[in-house]
Length: 300
Image (cartoon, rainbow, N blue to C red; front, side):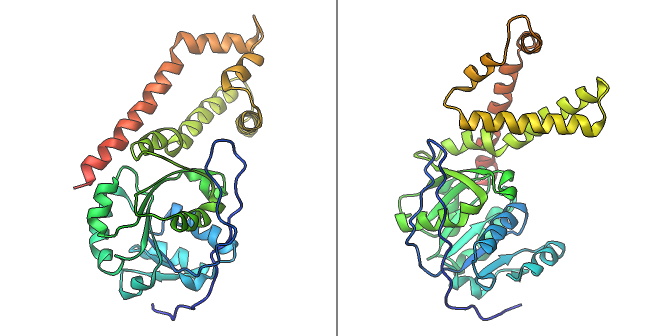
């Protein structure tokens, strides 16, 4: 399908986040006109697309290349331009967002690169290094990102690293695109993206794992499934919000709810006896090592 691309639509102005320690400001004067193309139309692409559309970005200036017919059918009601394969329309794109799996990135890049040398590129593929991206895309301006799935509900965390050719204006565009997905932080070193992957990229699965255990324990103690789920989810949400709003460290917050000889102390002592904290950190290091290995495995 090919449609004429309108020539005017301002990129939405992002709302800076107030979270401490995060680089989340973007220029309020960004009125440039942009065309954005996504390579891959899965969950992360859909989250960013949804945010752009809600912010007022014109659907006809958004293109998605998605080889799966079933996924294309889900995207078409959004009004965006959906394509089964790359074509010359890509030469009009100011920004290419790569939302493909690491194992297919190289092949996809070889198909797209002939039209996109002058575009800004944003990759959300885990592990694929800047060196590989630059070699495959033959484009000077590349940004790596590691988002997470809470971006689907506007509560994501994204780590970003840009190569030296990326300008402040390019970063403003990236921030404007990501502003509806949650918070972000610009990193000084590319290697830190592996830590972001281990902590926040894979982190939602850790939370769901812990949530499963809390729900199962609640049911085994006699609560209904719905009661256990409400209490467990509500507790995780409430504790997270309390930590976000508090100036205290997590350790101090934990100590404040741990009365000597009480129920919380009994639970925490059991966790310590099982070395749960050490095992949990070891699990995150396993994710970190796998992020590094992905770059080696699929980056040639």
